Image 1 (cartoon, rainbow, N blue to C red):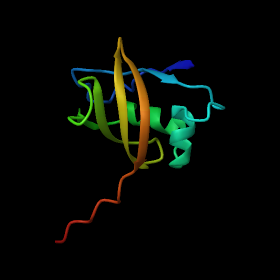
Image 2: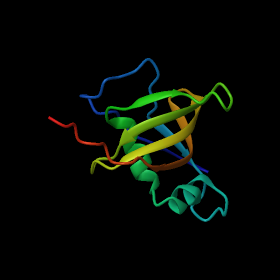
Image 3: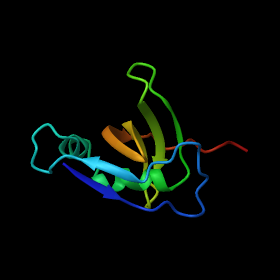
Length: 108
């Protein structure tokens, strides 16, 4: 298991909870969180980027109290939905994620 740490961008709207460290399994672990994200076409670095841009999150009512769903975007603008556990002290363990559909343009 490895933990990576990043700093939040200053321009980000900071919610009451902030995550800036991430827990990752070894890349070679068959059923680890890194491999699971890659099965969905997401690199761990892309998932981390979502926490450092404007995002929306809520508690995942289907799971335990410390599990959240986050809708965010990567540095390149890719929109992702992530499911992660708040492990305390700014540490997040991302379980899974997937692409969000493109936003529909508003009609004038």
